[in-house]
Structures are given as C-alpha cells and as structure tokens.
Image (cartoon, rainbow, N blue to C red; front, side, top):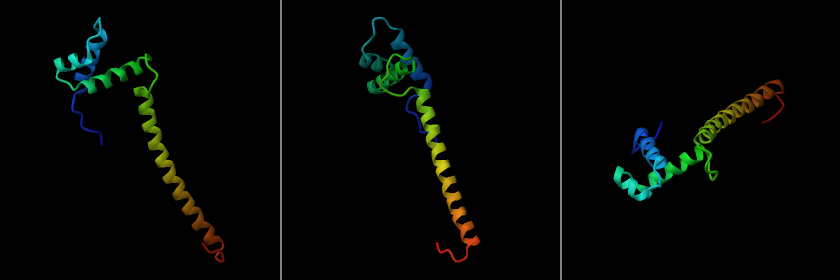
Length: 102
C-alpha cells in the first residue's frame, strides 16, 4: 500500500520547476515559505530532481530506486519459491527412501 503524501505530486513538480527556472536561484527557505512547504521537503525534492537530471551522483535516481524496489520484491518471491522447492524435495526424497530420517 502506498504511503499517504502530505504534498501532492503536482505541487512538488511545480515547486521544483519554480526553483530550477529561477535565475539567480532563490533561497530554498524563502521559496518554501512562499509556497507553504517545509524547507527540507523542498530541498529533498530539488536534490532528487538534480539526481534524475544527472547533475548529482550522490544517490539513486527515481528510476534506480523503482528498480531496486522491484528487485527486492522479486528476491522475496524467489526466496519463498526456493523454500517451497527445498521442502518438496525433502518430502519427495523421504518418500523414495523410507529408511532415511529427516
């Protein structure tokens, strides 16, 4: 289940766009106050937009983050499947050799 967002995606995109097109760059604190955002929220959004644009390399881009989430989910599913196969294999082996104790 997706987490509830305090700020809409539209507001996020608009705030980041306002910062990125401004010249000279405004203070994040002032811009956030003018829009009604928490400054650290805006600062984080700006950093993520810079990562996604290839201007920063100190973290994961949005695409890399989504891929990581998908790979972690797949990993959990594969571990469950392996456990089922391991259990089934042990049961099958025990049926073939009744003298074999588990």
